[in-house]
Image (cartoon, helix red, strand yellow):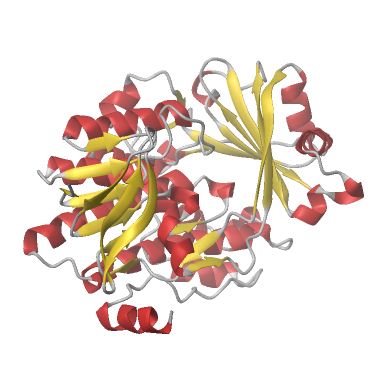
Length: 427
């Protein structure tokens, strides 16, 4: 028998859990299909201030405050020789009791909390279930075919399917929508340490960005249970110079490229394996097509330097949940209905993308921009904190005095009925 729902979500990560919680709270019949068994490992542990809004919307703030996650109030930048900037405290610009205090999370625990929250709101969650394909009627997605852990394959149908599959980008990859960023093709190598040095008091949860040559950088993210997430990001040709290929060898060579990192890791011990990820910056040409909506990393993922990934995933989950609720309530789930959603997400992605591009330019420094234009400090803080849907035109003009910035990518519009039909014919 075919099962019917109001909405099907592919993936139970932050974007899927957030959208699913909102739709279920509105009373819609929601099914979340998750390939893994939670809790499961995932990189991306540092939350930025403007994750507060989506977390508050789905009722997660009390759970976060009662969790063991390390509280985060600031970010610090460290030069290669170990010279450290003063911490940039979020409460110098935002409300200390809300937006200005965020968390360093263990993603396995954080994502479990989010998925359980969606369940509590009324979403049905099926873990260890693989989505095989989208079900089509003409050019419209009408559901999915899935296989559960017992090997049973079945179909589920809904007026709208949300692709929240993360970097797998289930729909975009299968439809040829997935596009690499023209410039952001970095490589990340990381591991975890127990007992590394960290700040005290309010600085215990400080995120540190520590520079290495060729505009590479380390992250140093304190977690609970005396653990630290630490990794290096740079061009692949830099990291693999002199023929090094093993992630462990690359990581430990780069540790010696920054005095602060070397000193802080010297008293700790590495725990577990060394991970590597390359060329992870991707964008989808379209945000939607008939019966389909892309959410979170399945829509776009930037560089990890400013920890924007989880914020954009949660933000897109909130926007998607509200947009799909409106579409279901009005009986109009056409792709065109989601054009405002796609434009808002692309605006946020493009604003953060410009700041990421500037960061990697050798001639750029935040300090020089602020020395030239003191008013830039607040705008930079807003973008870095995740307040990305505002007019930054003046900031980009100031930054262009130092370095070039990219044009917006022509992506994000929905693929409407007529275009989808043409695509189907040409395919």
